[in-house]
Image (cartoon, rainbow, N blue to C red; front, side, top):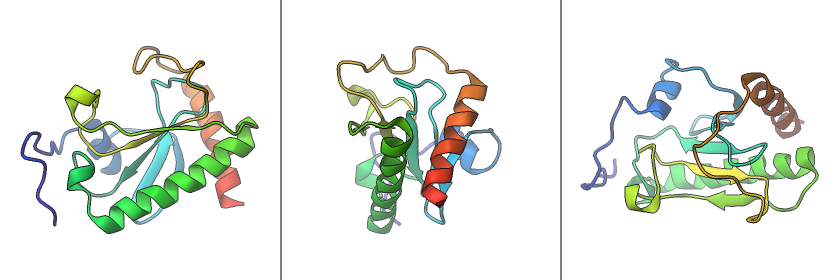
Length: 146
């Protein structure tokens, strides 16, 4: 396994690790043996999804190639679903490495936000309605599984 970034050690108690362990509920959009995609509870726009690897990796430098490829393939599936469900072409793909870049959860993750840069809300400001997240997650999952 690749050595974890020496600047930030992987914390097994981070929120995404707890989600992968089944300790924290989430609204799943898609899952396979290497990745999990779920609704961001503090979305920057409606339909904001996070894709994470099932590998302990703080940032891209820590991610093993097969997990990096899996994250990209899952991101592709989610983006196609977002375009269909939200009837829009624009999906912002964002990935932050390190606290100086704005990373707040130190488990590698990709943000997929069906929005334009001009409509984008601020990160981690407003928590979304739980029922709305569940509804959107179901719509996206249905398109991916179709």
